[in-house]
Amino acid sequence: MDLDIRFTDSESWDASMPERLRWLRENDPVHWSGHDDIWVVTKYADVSAISKNQKLFSSAEGVRPDKRIKIGLIDEGEPRHGNLRRLINRGFTPRMVAKLEEIFLRITTEAIDAVAERGECDFVDDIAVPLPLLLIAEMIGIRREDHDRFHQWSDRMIAADGNADDPVVTAAAGQAFFEYSTYVTEIIEDRRKNPRDDLVSILTGAKDEGMLVQFDKEMMPGMETGEEYESLANDELIMMLVILLVAGNETTRNGISGGMQLLIENPAERQKLIDDPGLIPSAVEEMVRMVSPVNSFSRTVTRDTELRGKRLREGQRVLMIYPSANRDADVFDEPDTFRVERNPQHLGFGIGTHFCLGANLARMEMRVAFRELLRRLPDMEYAAGGPVLKPSALVRTCLHMQVRFTPERRAA
Ligand code: HEM
Image (cartoon, rainbow, N blue to C red):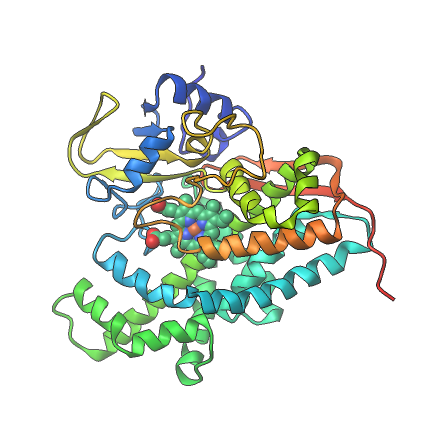
């Protein structure tokens, strides 16, 4: 088996990766990758145990191996992480998700309407990209005319991952971050003056209750002037809005495009969902298991320890490979088979204190999207060569997917 690669480089994640991961699960599940200086962990039980043990395997030094910059929340230690998470969770209550479901159904209906009579489309550009993107744009309050810019900011910020050596990509990401920050600062200022029933108003409201100011004091002991608190709190809000964009967009996009691939490639399973849409929630879990939109996150070992007989040293990094854990034959019977009834307990959203904050939102999006797609365009199939994938160490990336289907007749 060719293990002479860097697992943290995006180009390594080509079509040869699944076979390599299978080999590692069976032969060297806690593998030292000398090229990356990182432990590569491929089995379900280990990914689960590491994720649940923040004391020993910390997120606080970053969860992406190639850069140790702080993104916030996802790489925050306790107790700050728990505090921030409780705060941002206010935007994800069942009431908020129900309200977002209405908005999301409208977004989905409009996207399908735009292609339904044509009988063909690029599933990525026309469906998978706009759905999560427009929902997050609505959540944050991005104006319609700025949705294209919003899309570009998101793509550029994500492209920097796994490409830390590429100065052009890194500079573009920095520029995108700057433009997005400037834009959302305006929105934050506006919601402070004119609060609405939306996420940013909830977050600014929490700040005004003094929650964020308090966190800043913890972070910056000794700083006492109100002015500085104000701007720091702004930064904190901006970071949260960056995380939402980066964490919630490409992941869900690729969950949707990967899920559609599974349906096209497994017509008998798709037929079960058409016959019984009640199976869609279970099918969505199976899609997240098999697609595993997030390929990897990392942790830092906080003291010397042992895992499956390997000695892990304090300060070393550990790379958890989600698509591998989710195809572990010790946990899943016939792991490479797509079964819509399986309703698996997968690790696609992680586990433990950093469990995906947007999991319920992503589930809602995928359920609504596939319910509508299967109802309106049930015979979708590949056209012109099928999916075009781009290797990525972070998020499975489908760039294009030409499809065709029986055109929908316009209702009289
Ligand atoms: C199918 C779609 C998605 C997948 C597969 C996914 C996957 C993940 C995973 C694996 C983690 C765990 C990180 C870790 O343990 O280090 C995570 C965390 C997170 N996700 Fe998601 N995610 C998805 C959608 C979303 C959405 C829609 C949002 C928000 C709008 C979101 C926001 C977050 C945030 C904020 C965290 C950090 C939570 C924390 O550290 O407490 N995700 N996600």
